[in-house]
Picture 1: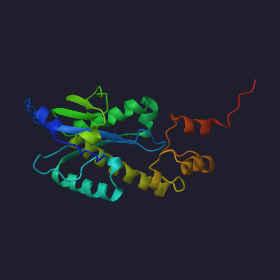
Picture 2: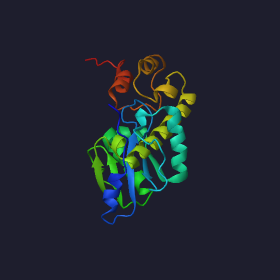
Picture 3: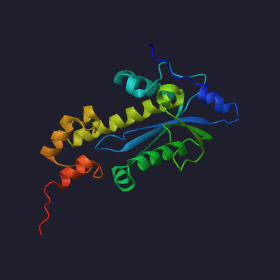
Picture 4: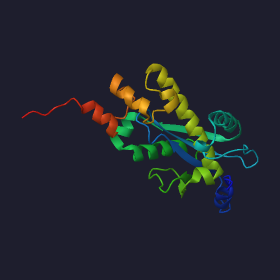
Length: 210
Protein backbone atom coordinates (compact mmCIF):
# COMPACT_ATOMS: atom_id res chain seq x y z
CA UNK A 1 0.00 0.00 0.00
CA UNK A 2 1.46 3.36 -1.04
CA UNK A 3 2.36 5.85 1.69
CA UNK A 4 0.03 8.86 1.73
CA UNK A 5 2.12 12.05 1.78
CA UNK A 6 1.50 14.68 4.46
CA UNK A 7 -0.93 17.45 3.61
CA UNK A 8 -1.49 21.14 4.34
CA UNK A 9 -5.06 20.70 5.52
CA UNK A 10 -4.22 21.02 9.25
CA UNK A 11 -2.71 24.45 8.61
CA UNK A 12 -5.65 25.50 6.41
CA UNK A 13 -8.10 24.39 9.10
CA UNK A 14 -6.43 26.62 11.69
CA UNK A 15 -6.00 29.59 9.33
CA UNK A 16 -9.69 29.37 8.41
CA UNK A 17 -10.39 30.52 11.98
CA UNK A 18 -8.50 33.75 11.30
CA UNK A 19 -5.14 32.64 12.70
CA UNK A 20 -2.29 34.10 10.67
CA UNK A 21 1.00 32.57 11.82
CA UNK A 22 0.73 28.77 11.98
CA UNK A 23 3.90 26.75 12.57
CA UNK A 24 4.75 23.06 12.68
CA UNK A 25 6.93 21.81 15.51
CA UNK A 26 8.92 18.61 16.02
CA UNK A 27 11.89 17.45 18.07
CA UNK A 28 14.66 14.93 17.50
CA UNK A 29 16.88 13.19 20.02
CA UNK A 30 14.82 11.75 22.85
CA UNK A 31 16.35 8.29 22.53
CA UNK A 32 20.13 8.87 22.26
CA UNK A 33 22.53 8.36 25.15
CA UNK A 34 24.49 11.48 24.21
CA UNK A 35 24.01 14.97 22.83
CA UNK A 36 21.29 17.60 23.07
CA UNK A 37 17.66 17.27 22.12
CA UNK A 38 16.88 19.51 19.15
CA UNK A 39 13.58 21.07 18.09
CA UNK A 40 12.51 23.06 15.07
CA UNK A 41 9.51 25.25 14.29
CA UNK A 42 8.68 25.96 10.66
CA UNK A 43 6.17 28.31 9.09
CA UNK A 44 5.61 27.33 5.46
CA UNK A 45 4.67 29.70 2.67
CA UNK A 46 1.61 28.03 1.06
CA UNK A 47 2.85 29.09 -2.36
CA UNK A 48 6.40 27.79 -1.91
CA UNK A 49 6.15 24.40 -0.22
CA UNK A 50 9.07 22.13 -1.18
CA UNK A 51 8.15 18.91 -2.95
CA UNK A 52 8.85 15.68 -1.11
CA UNK A 53 8.34 16.76 2.51
CA UNK A 54 7.65 13.84 4.82
CA UNK A 55 8.65 12.10 8.03
CA UNK A 56 12.40 12.71 8.27
CA UNK A 57 13.00 9.09 9.30
CA UNK A 58 11.55 7.89 5.98
CA UNK A 59 13.73 10.16 3.81
CA UNK A 60 17.33 9.45 2.79
CA UNK A 61 20.07 11.51 4.41
CA UNK A 62 20.97 13.13 1.10
CA UNK A 63 17.40 14.13 0.36
CA UNK A 64 16.96 15.47 3.90
CA UNK A 65 19.96 17.75 3.35
CA UNK A 66 18.45 19.06 0.09
CA UNK A 67 15.06 19.71 1.71
CA UNK A 68 16.75 21.36 4.69
CA UNK A 69 18.53 23.84 2.44
CA UNK A 70 15.36 24.52 0.49
CA UNK A 71 13.34 25.11 3.66
CA UNK A 72 15.87 27.67 4.87
CA UNK A 73 15.32 29.55 1.61
CA UNK A 74 11.51 29.44 1.33
CA UNK A 75 10.18 29.11 4.89
CA UNK A 76 10.52 30.75 8.29
CA UNK A 77 12.62 28.45 10.46
CA UNK A 78 13.56 28.48 14.13
CA UNK A 79 15.86 25.91 15.74
CA UNK A 80 16.44 25.41 19.46
CA UNK A 81 17.95 22.87 21.84
CA UNK A 82 17.90 21.58 25.38
CA UNK A 83 21.34 20.71 26.71
CA UNK A 84 22.57 17.47 28.22
CA UNK A 85 22.56 19.23 31.60
CA UNK A 86 18.93 20.23 31.15
CA UNK A 87 18.02 16.69 30.08
CA UNK A 88 19.65 15.28 33.21
CA UNK A 89 18.11 17.83 35.57
CA UNK A 90 14.59 18.03 34.10
CA UNK A 91 14.11 14.57 32.44
CA UNK A 92 14.06 13.95 28.70
CA UNK A 93 10.34 14.64 28.14
CA UNK A 94 10.43 18.03 29.84
CA UNK A 95 13.71 18.90 28.12
CA UNK A 96 12.29 18.04 24.70
CA UNK A 97 9.27 20.23 25.45
CA UNK A 98 11.61 23.04 26.53
CA UNK A 99 13.41 22.81 23.19
CA UNK A 100 10.05 23.00 21.40
CA UNK A 101 9.01 26.03 23.44
CA UNK A 102 12.25 27.80 22.55
CA UNK A 103 11.85 26.99 18.85
CA UNK A 104 8.27 28.32 18.76
CA UNK A 105 9.28 31.49 20.62
CA UNK A 106 11.74 32.21 17.81
CA UNK A 107 8.97 32.64 15.24
CA UNK A 108 6.34 34.71 17.08
CA UNK A 109 3.73 32.09 16.19
CA UNK A 110 -0.02 32.42 16.71
CA UNK A 111 -0.68 28.67 16.66
CA UNK A 112 1.60 25.64 16.77
CA UNK A 113 0.93 22.19 15.34
CA UNK A 114 2.89 19.83 17.60
CA UNK A 115 4.05 16.33 16.75
CA UNK A 116 2.79 13.89 19.38
CA UNK A 117 -0.05 13.75 21.89
CA UNK A 118 1.12 16.42 24.36
CA UNK A 119 1.33 20.21 24.30
CA UNK A 120 4.42 21.69 26.00
CA UNK A 121 3.17 23.72 28.95
CA UNK A 122 5.38 26.74 28.30
CA UNK A 123 4.39 27.44 24.70
CA UNK A 124 3.98 31.11 23.79
CA UNK A 125 0.85 30.43 21.71
CA UNK A 126 -2.12 28.11 21.31
CA UNK A 127 -1.37 24.64 19.97
CA UNK A 128 -2.81 21.43 18.57
CA UNK A 129 -1.11 18.06 19.09
CA UNK A 130 -1.10 15.67 16.12
CA UNK A 131 -0.11 12.06 16.70
CA UNK A 132 2.30 10.94 13.96
CA UNK A 133 2.19 14.54 12.78
CA UNK A 134 5.51 14.25 10.95
CA UNK A 135 3.82 11.82 8.53
CA UNK A 136 0.50 13.71 8.30
CA UNK A 137 1.13 17.46 8.46
CA UNK A 138 3.45 19.31 6.05
CA UNK A 139 4.63 21.91 8.55
CA UNK A 140 5.51 19.25 11.13
CA UNK A 141 7.23 17.17 8.45
CA UNK A 142 9.30 20.22 7.56
CA UNK A 143 10.18 20.74 11.23
CA UNK A 144 11.19 17.10 11.60
CA UNK A 145 13.60 17.41 8.67
CA UNK A 146 15.17 20.63 9.96
CA UNK A 147 15.56 19.23 13.48
CA UNK A 148 17.09 15.95 12.33
CA UNK A 149 19.58 17.48 9.91
CA UNK A 150 20.62 20.02 12.55
CA UNK A 151 21.10 17.44 15.30
CA UNK A 152 22.88 14.97 13.03
CA UNK A 153 25.36 17.70 12.11
CA UNK A 154 25.96 18.46 15.78
CA UNK A 155 26.69 14.81 16.47
CA UNK A 156 29.12 14.61 13.52
CA UNK A 157 31.00 17.59 15.00
CA UNK A 158 31.03 15.99 18.46
CA UNK A 159 32.28 12.73 16.94
CA UNK A 160 35.43 14.56 15.80
CA UNK A 161 36.03 15.72 19.37
CA UNK A 162 35.25 12.31 20.86
CA UNK A 163 36.19 9.62 18.31
CA UNK A 164 35.34 6.00 18.84
CA UNK A 165 31.68 6.22 19.83
CA UNK A 166 30.38 6.24 16.27
CA UNK A 167 28.32 9.39 16.72
CA UNK A 168 28.92 10.37 13.10
CA UNK A 169 26.72 7.41 12.10
CA UNK A 170 24.63 6.53 15.18
CA UNK A 171 23.91 10.15 16.27
CA UNK A 172 24.35 9.09 19.89
CA UNK A 173 21.73 6.34 19.82
CA UNK A 174 22.44 3.15 21.82
CA UNK A 175 23.98 0.96 19.12
CA UNK A 176 26.27 -1.99 19.97
CA UNK A 177 29.25 0.10 18.83
CA UNK A 178 28.24 2.92 21.16
CA UNK A 179 27.77 0.56 24.12
CA UNK A 180 31.18 -1.01 23.53
CA UNK A 181 32.85 2.40 23.32
CA UNK A 182 31.24 3.39 26.62
CA UNK A 183 32.80 0.33 28.23
CA UNK A 184 36.18 0.81 26.55
CA UNK A 185 36.54 4.60 26.52
CA UNK A 186 34.25 5.72 29.33
CA UNK A 187 31.65 8.46 29.65
CA UNK A 188 32.13 11.86 27.97
CA UNK A 189 30.69 15.22 29.08
CA UNK A 190 28.14 14.80 26.29
CA UNK A 191 26.63 11.62 27.70
CA UNK A 192 23.29 11.81 29.51
CA UNK A 193 24.03 10.62 33.03
CA UNK A 194 20.34 10.23 33.88
CA UNK A 195 19.99 7.54 31.20
CA UNK A 196 20.30 4.07 32.72
CA UNK A 197 23.06 2.60 30.48
CA UNK A 198 25.31 5.62 31.14
CA UNK A 199 24.44 5.73 34.83
CA UNK A 200 25.20 2.03 35.21
CA UNK A 201 28.63 2.37 33.61
CA UNK A 202 29.49 5.37 35.78
CA UNK A 203 28.63 3.50 38.95
CA UNK A 204 29.45 -0.11 38.08
CA UNK A 205 32.73 0.02 39.98
CA UNK A 206 31.25 1.61 43.10
CA UNK A 207 30.90 -0.98 45.85
CA UNK A 208 29.15 -0.49 49.14
CA UNK A 209 30.98 -1.93 52.11
CA UNK A 210 29.61 -2.26 55.59
